[in-house]
Image 1: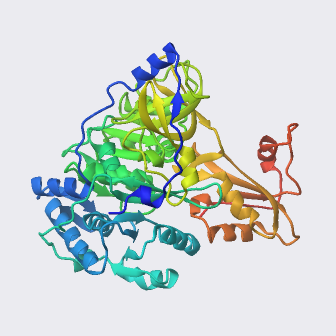
Image 2 (image 1 turned 90 degrees about the horizontal axis):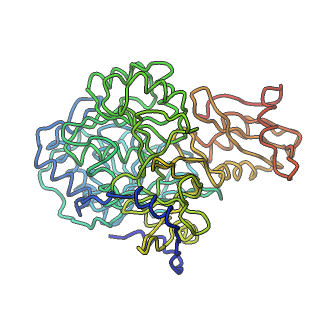
Length: 547
């Protein structure tokens, strides 16, 4: 099977030596103490099939059309895998999955890993240009889609081989594909926003998924668990939701719509007795504000993706009590979650909610100028462990910048430089302090402001642009763009239409304002505060959803 180093080989460099004083060394040893936990040296295919053999009649999947037990789900995935193998899918191939949340989606993901393939989760609503670029960069020839969508997809993505996935046309094949890969094979590829206008492909190994969900510290995952699948499959939270359930013999409940209604969410959580749910920060805040009883019966509420509002967390603590809400943090490059913080109390001397301590088989360091930072001193968060991606697809220089070999406390480590600032508190947990660059989180999606500006500046009608964020009513953040036009007929809606043709919806600014110029600070930088302060003044603008 093709492994990621073959796809994104990075230049070699001498290991970085990270120094540490006594206080910093003691604090980091305490932070990372006892994080090493044994986990199976197996891939997703083998672990899922073991659960299907152990609990064949247990409910694996609840979907809008009914339920599938483990034997049925395994058999349907075996049948699709055989069809894929006959169509030419080979171990190491990247298979694009363009299927919305449904039983067919889960069957498609399982069938792909059963073939030894790598799944590329994508959204059919993405612009054609972006979809074609991602398929080209991953060498994806085969595309899985619903039968009724294939003609339209074929017109949008010429030169691909399309395979229909319809549950009612599959049979339950007992024999699984014989392929047995390595835990170091690539299971899937996520794409994140890129500052140069080019999304970065992040390949994730099988062992990284297993590390994420096996003996999880941040919530209880076992055969009695019921997990809600709510995140878009292209968002890495779906990795936790899907495999956290299916690799434990637990039940996965698919939320039955692409749009979240709090009333419907409450009914789904209650009817199926969901025990674990992940909500983005913005959605969590909305639930706390508008319908806190939605989560009344859920054992563990995981939430993250953006910095948390202490006001909302205080309300949640009062309503749900301690240890029900767990803040989770982690970049895509470290396979979904890297740290966790069970909310038990809010300390008066902390201005933000901690991101906590490392999850199992993960190590975290706060580093500045080649030294571990002692408690209280801010630095960059660096992560280590088997959750790390091998690197960015086809971007060796970016890989070399962000993934570094180092020696920490005399121990060799491969580290991912997150670009996040934090400090170690005296209580021994990490406290997030923002970004070192212009990367932000919008509804849990990672956004490089430079990617949005790149596509705006590429328009002939645009002389200059500035992209930033501001708080929204849900307690999260929204994108705001300011444009200095180069032509008299520059129109905000035309610019937004241009962006919608090239970018996913979450990268299209909610507010786009035309200006005669961009004000500068005394140091010559764009005056972000002045721009945001002027938003309430009448001007040519388009405000609304980014869809």
